[in-house]
Image (cartoon, rainbow, N blue to C red):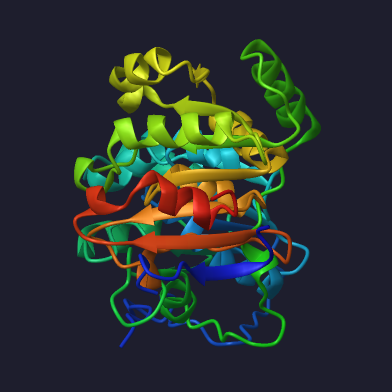
Amino acid sequence: MLGAGVTPAQGGAEPTVGSAFNLSDRLFPMLPHESTAHPIRRVLVIFPGALGDLMCLMPALAAISRRHSGASVELMARIELARLAAGRTVIARGHSIDAREVGALFTDEPPANSNARRFFADFERIYSFFASDDQRFRARLAAATDGHVSFHPFRPSGDGHVSAAYLRATEIEIDERASPVDSRLEPTPDDLAAASRAIAQSKCAVSNLIVIFPGSGSPGKNWPADKFAALASKLSLSMSNRASVAVILGPAEISLEPIFRESGVPVLKDLDLPTVAAIARVASAFVGNDSGVSHLAAAAGASGVVIFGPTDPARWGPMPAGTDGHIVILRRTPIASIEPDEVASALGRG
């Protein structure tokens, strides 16, 4: 049975950070306990990353929220990620990084710059992980607000997990207040209701449900789909601990649907990210590749097995949220050499 923490599975598993930049007196490196003469009501974090990147930023977002207690912490990111974070994490409100106000910072037209100021001037504190090496962007963002602005590297270099690197990049100390719950994403009642409807439509049972995420952002990180299908068959046919298995496909994985349909595995598709997170929360476990959706499932409090090939789980592995979730890492190269029986065993269903 999967318990709390991160475990490299036995046998198949292998179990100088960037700092804030300075531009002017108003663009200063973060101090562990920042103070200001003016109250901070609104804080904006600008972040350009994908789903997995955002989940790795979650501890830093929580630390920023603690630092600016009582302020509205808002996220400017890809619109689907901004919507996901708002109300389910420390983020109070989301904004699209493709908004015209951001585009205005890349032009010299005065009317465009005034449009940017109308938006950014409402924030007393801005943390930007976007275009941190673009001096023109940095100067224009600084000119668009009277608040304090700092710039921080996206995917900062250094040893250890990237989440710790983000904390160090914002010069936030990892102290006794930091905990795995900082990375937790809480599905809303509406999310859980949508998850229940999706599961019911698939004719899967909620009890003993295992969900499979067979995709990722890179084909080289994907365990073969036919092995996922074989794993699903093994889990659903087990006489001792039979599971209800469903596979969740995103738009990039839709070509895999026939493989799972032919194996008799229910397929869930056309789901938004909050519903996927809620399904992972109510499931008994999940199995996925090194992918954003595996990070999402872990952040939602799910337990599961994550299969790694060329990437380093010590740097990029999903983090369990709180004490409930437990993540087992299976890593080998080539990734296809991992067998379904090994994954089932890592799930405790061998």
